[in-house]
Image (cartoon, rainbow, N blue to C red; front, side, top):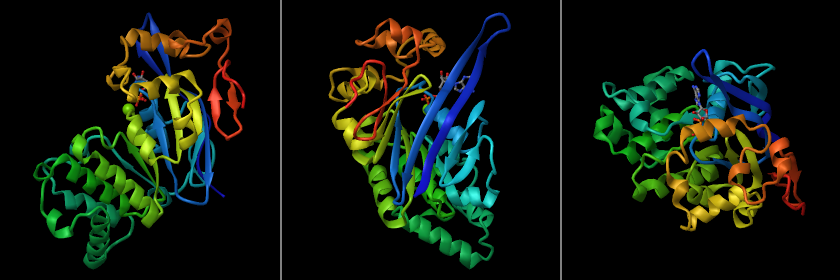
Length: 323
Ligand SMILES: Nc1ncnc2c1ncn2[C@@H]1O[C@H](COP(=O)(O)OP(=O)(O)O)[C@@H](O)[C@H]1O
Ligand SMILES: [Mg+2]
């Protein structure tokens, strides 16, 4: 089986604050995730703002180095100790798409020049080869080469431009696309188009996705696997259907309540004052304990271990029942 995603004791610490009082933010704190499959999968990474999702994406994309630990994507070590793939292998393995497509493209360059550059970088040299690669990638996201040629970013809607950035990501025929909040800047009415596009790319092109989102509703719709994060730690991880139909971690339960409409906190960009957030990052035990209905003294003292359930999911809680 292919190791699509594996992180081993992955840690990333940031330091904040002045010289006197410095705060350490363990934006990734011993993150251990393993997804093995012979089929393409959509893995969702969910959690509210400040849980470490973007940090994980950046480590995987080699934009930042982890403090310790390692990450493997499609059997390639992408972070930490080990044989790092060549640039070409890396580009053919994983590609990013970002939250704001208007930031991904300069306002002063035509968008097709970006696609051309990507095609050239992976070895398409002739005009014909390049044009074929662009045409195919654009078709697969429902656009025509002629509609895009010579146009600047401001000539597209957010949804269209996000499609162009997905087309760009597809040119190297990557095995997995790392998509960090790819629909949060897209009009609500067009979000499902992009999400459905992920599903069709998975079927037709066998592309896997790491879909990073704070939107549990879309995660519910597309995911094969789901990892729920809270303040740098994984709280629940496993089969998406199982977790979303029967959440076991109190935090996952809270999140699901929030999409049911009873708790709107989830939709806010930041949950509480950042002081609180920074404080929770310093907790040595369970970081969710202040908000948790099950919390006891043990949760202050010890980080909860992964409790493996019958259905293969892992729940990081001292007081969850083992099934
Ligand atoms: N470059 C940085 N320097 C210091 N702290 C950072 C940096 N990037 C992120 N953080 C902090 O790390 C935590 C996780 O951030 P992030 O990975 O962006 O979370 P998410 O994507 O889930 O919102 C937050 O508390 C954030 O303030
Ligand atoms: Mg983020």
